[in-house]
Image 1 (cartoon, rainbow, N blue to C red):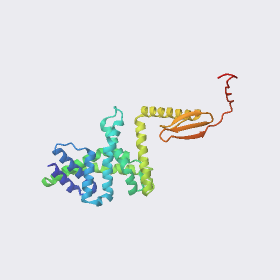
Image 2: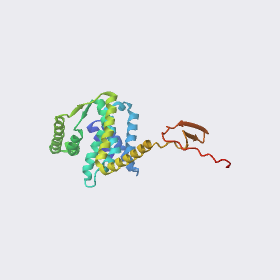
Image 3: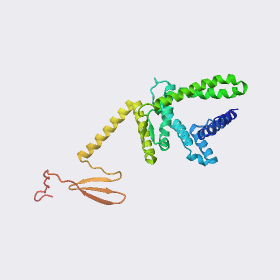
Image 4: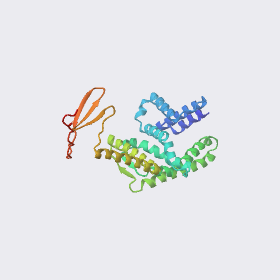
Length: 287
């Protein structure tokens, strides 16, 4: 029954690339549950992508398919870790509401730049504002479909409610798109995609630092201590040699001998201006 409902939903909304990806993941997940095995989300995503590309290799160049796969990959890979970054005082629903669109946007950013060379400044805020309106549109719209066959008048009620929520989604998009600096110009091609990847990595690191100020401070202090010790070694003029090399001091030269090769490499040491100690000579008649 679940598979039949999934097939009807695909037929209702249309077999687009993103819909096919979601339907294939759902079908594989249902098969795993029916077989008594709880499949991992990443494994389901990889299996769904492989199956769809085997049937239609042209999906590899479809932006809708790529964005759908990358958004799902971002939610699976980075969504849960980002949720754990929030303090315990933050409700889990709020943490998930921020982590899911944040992770999806980071992974989809490089492909969006290839599709449209611009950076959406308020994309995360717009997704957060419209997140609560998306579920009623889907649920009410789906519930109105079987009611059309029974009573069109009765089906008009959920359809009207779904239309109200859909209008709210459109209003949120128009409001954020009209704000100053909503779309910033971004480089095109491979340069734009690579710089967007770098920006995504830096953004993820900045978010971690913001959510972990104490650990970031300790990490900074540890790095500072290591840097100070390294500078002390350089300033004091201490010798450094790789592992496996024996270092011996002698006057005027530094002899480094590697036991495996049995070779001696000599480098001159800087001469000091201090007077050298006089060599001791035995007294006359002494031994």
